[in-house]
Length: 147
Image 1 (cartoon, rainbow, N blue to C red):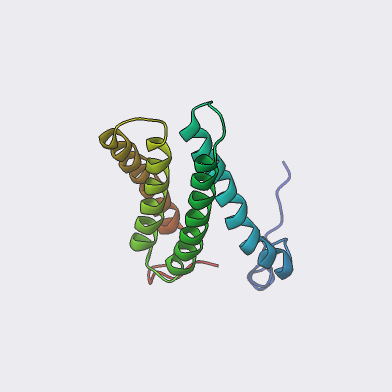
Image 2 (image 1 turned 60 degrees about the vertical axis):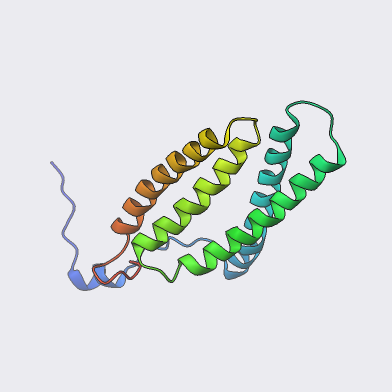
């Protein structure tokens, strides 16, 4: 049987995996493009749910564009603020954003406020569990992001 030869510790410590394959310019473009694209998709989805297959009206277009603008602004704000928080608050903030966004989206289908709120809470809770686990496994004991 063939085995790999053990590498020296000095050589292994100096070699860091290159996980970031995009240039800084691509990251700047993505930081602007991602909120815009997600906001437009969300706005279209809200408007499509609201009209329920009926005709497109001016109020429907207005609802879609206002929903898209609010989603974009909140997404940018949550992204800017959440990076400075500890993992618990970081996960809670993203879970609240996701739960509210999906609860509002669900309310546009004509369901009751109670059912829409319950769906938002359920989505938010699932999002919190997943994000808390991710942040917990990617931080050190002091709460700094592991690089």
